Image (cartoon, helix red, strand yellow):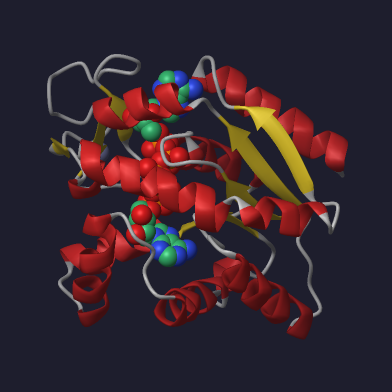
Length: 217
Ligand code: AP5
Ligand code: ZN
């Protein structure tokens, strides 16, 4: 399957993508995680991306599309993928369509995770991520680690993302509404959008997502 996940910052895209990718046996491709890996390796791309991410803005399309294409072209993505955080505006969606068309492929679904703004703000404020593995994500209240600031899975250090400060989160939400939400209409016109409520326990949201994707097939 080829799936795009969309939803505001903090909706639980990363959390759900890890689980869905495992169940559906497809790789989880997160442009945010790819940028953060570049930042920690101090690459040129990482240095460029950091300035945009810290301000809550989108990284320019040219570099983002090139990075996403490169990742989608790797062997593990041949049979399908779950895109998390890409595309994030209409020109990225058009670039993805062109790429898929040139390979004679198409998307199966666009899974839209809906969550109210006050809830996503609370989720982001309490999020802690593992330095060793970006799939190890906790929340200080909702899914607390057993030991403060230590990852339950691998013992790595948990940290708060630089772009999770209150001011940057407000900017990211504004960017989501103005630049990313229009892709929902873009994909609705292709009949691909499946919307689910992303509230309630993590397991319930995963169940809802799998049901919705099955129905959509
Ligand atoms: P990115 O990393 O994609 O961030 P985002 O879209 O803002 O989304 P988040 O990672 O903040 O949230 P999430 O929905 O994954 O939530 P999570 O599962 O962690 O992008 C970051 C930046 O990179 C962008 O601002 C931009 O600068 C750049 N970028 C990335 N892609 C780009 C692109 N294509 N083009 C240009 N620039 C790009 O969950 C949040 C918290 O809630 C966690 O603590 C979790 O434990 C908790 N939680 C999750 N689900 C539940 C639940 N059901 N109940 C209770 N708590 C829950
Ligand atoms: Zn860990």
